[in-house]
Image 1 (cartoon, rainbow, N blue to C red):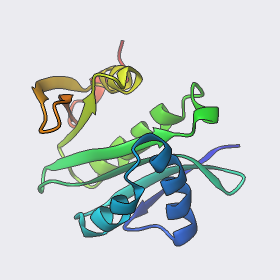
Image 2: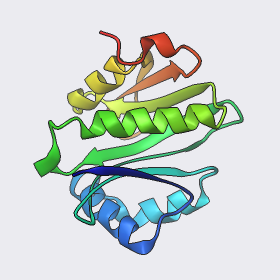
Image 3: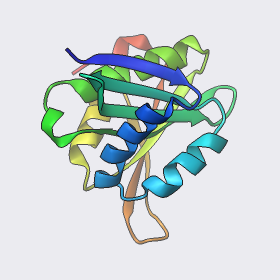
Image 4: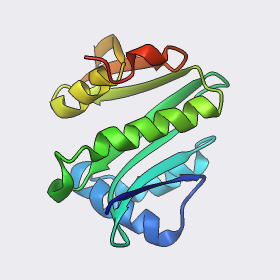
Length: 154
């Protein structure tokens, strides 16, 4: 049974270690993640756990009084295709909306098509594309949390 938990602020060391194990396999910058996360305002960790092991996560933080940024998210390779990313995203959006944020935004890359599709399925709109400083094509997306009709629409 996979449980979804959330933490406003840094979770305990065991949870952070589980997140870092998954994070480093995909993003390879686990060392700087903890340091950066600790300084982000209103940081929220949404974590999927099975048998006391982290199998997925979403991390976000406040950009302003009205805007929230969905920063990182990942699911362990062995647990993909089971709806975990959707479940974590839905919980993150509900918690952020309950905290009175009006807009949630995120960025992704063209190479992470599954994440792009998931964001669009959950009501995000593409607002901009650009080439970053490393020459990587990036995609900005945002979603109004005030318009609940679009959540999960096809």
